[in-house]
Amino acid sequence: MFIIKNWIVLYIGVKIIIGDYFMKTIKDIDLKNKKVVIRVDYNVPIENGVIKDSSKIKKSLRSINYLLENNCRVVILSHFGRIKSEEDKIKNSLKVVAKELANLLGKNVKFLDNCYGDKVKNIVNTCGLGEVILLENTRFMDIPEKRESGNDLSLAEYWASLGEVYINDAFGSMHRAHASTAGIAKYLPHAIGFLVMDELEHLNILIHNTPHPFTVFMGGAKVDDKLPIIKFLIERCDYLLVGGGIANSFLKAKGADIGNSIATSDEGIINELKKLMEDYKGKIVLPIDFTIDDGIIYDVGNKSIEVYKKYIDKSEIIFVNGTCGKFEDERFMEGTSNLFKTLKESGKKVIVGGGDTASACIKFGFKDSFDFISSGGGATLEYIADGTLKALEWME
Image (cartoon, rainbow, N blue to C red; front, top):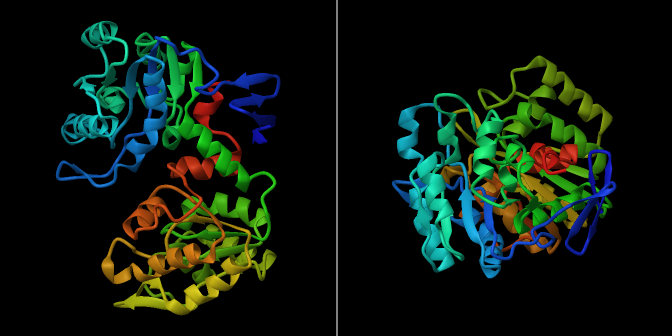
């Protein structure tokens, strides 16, 4: 069962029932020989023109292949990177992604160097059944005006004119109401894709009928950004294990000397952390040893991992969001790597948040070690906290 906001949501076969109506999935909608616009999340890491991690592209294949099995014309929309100037367009083209997608699909992908205009529409309208077209970065439409990120409905209507059906399979972007994730659903029959279905199914375990003991590991740099989700989860979980810069902020709130280590400077947040430690005494577990360089805490030590292990071993399910330290630096990767090793060896059900947490899983060779790794970063946390996402609300 899903709950989105105040609506009761039942997952029956492939249907998601919200209140008195269906939120359709890709399997509920007539797709045969249709022209389908599908929004995906191809915001992948690229260095020197080479894709460093193609997992987001791979996760989109199930929905794309399903469309091809239904003899659809497939028009793909995605954003990539941040576009704040004309110069940003040069380094944030989806052209390299088109090549990788073609390799993974085993068929030609036609890449268009624009995502708007008569030329784009003419090419899309003349494409054949079973063809795949990837349009250029949707965020190019944020220059000079923020038409994409501003959910400009005239732009949404244009993209809708390229198809007969709209599929949203971009879970990692669904916490934003953009023209390509939200507004477009106003103009076409629409449904969610397999990736979004999978995300909702797994994340709802953390919201409804969660098995206990339920343990959360919360790491990362900034407690300011994660305080709302910490306050939500601490009421639901049995143990909150803390690492990274977030742990530094808790330690600072306890009066510990953390030197120049990263931590919040907001006194209001410090006071909130103090109150959390008072109200949930025995539930919040902080690290007890550290890797320190020049007086700055960069990672947790082995004794801290041993402490975490005691709580992991008595848990039924663990949600992991964030890392133990500055894992990108090989001098400070041991804590995060050992945490993932401990989680794998525990044999417990583990759900991993997206973003840097997912990147760390891949970096240390644990991408196939856990029950589920979310493709979302902010979307994952927002869905857990709110039970809905901005783009989902446009698909009612």
